[in-house]
Image (cartoon, rainbow, N blue to C red; front, side, top):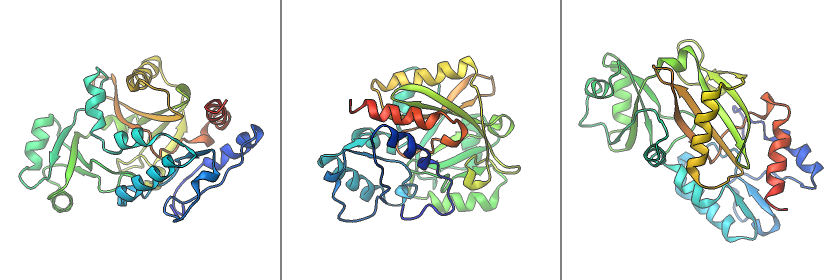
Length: 279
């Protein structure tokens, strides 16, 4: 992004530990033209939080980086895979519990009541298959006439995913577990503000550090093991289903906030993980 105004970003906290390992850091907006990527040893994708507005151009930029002498982290292949949330199908096929999801091509022929019935929920959440920041995300019930009309217009001819609204997100929150170089680093609990369901800080969500319970750590490990490769960074978003078992909400491998400010040692762990890739 050209500007992070209005967003919460913590990546500058990694600059000092990276400098201590001999790295210098330059922050470059992904839309900047004519960048000589060959001048860098590594390019780490961090906060291009507008990529969903032009994913084609975003991928073209990453392809130029990968053709250069710089090492792109995470890789273009993994970004392409993670860009569309249909990756959840592949993870679920490997036996990893995920939030139940319907995959649709448009809402024109479906009623909200029928979707609620199919998912066994009084309310549903509708969101795009390519998206970030909770953009174009709707919490809907059959009686939500205004929001239903907006969602129908937004997804008339657009691929989307539909999930049950999990009250556990409002009551308990959503857990994010962070992995650097494949190793667990830290975790936070995110809760939406009263009356909302979106957990991002930009939407008023509250964030706090948390020590995950053993079943959450085990669920995060299963997600990471399902990838079959070691990545520089990953964020595993988990929520507890009504029965209490943890399930994968999203696996963020492109531009997740890594919430470095909530664990004093996490910027150092990130710096060491990056440094190991080149040693």
